[in-house]
Image (tube, rainbow, N blue to C red):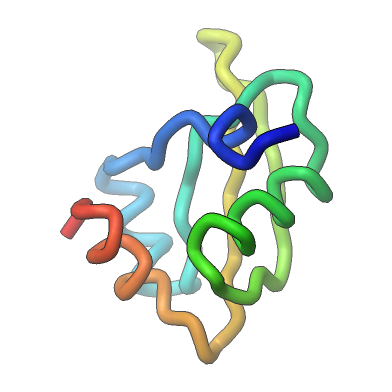
Length: 86
């Protein structure tokens, strides 16, 4: 699958900003049939970064969210700035 078919858009909520600052994580809305491995590979390809882990959650609205933890050498704030969230 193409990275841009897997990752729909980043979430910019109070919780996601707090996670970015405290745990070096970003939250993305992803396609419902994507796996954690596909999400990790897509993020690494799109942003040329190293991903430590991916956790997923399907919200009550039925959208799948990926909580992506970046490695220490790739600050989430830099990636958010690159996407124009900050």
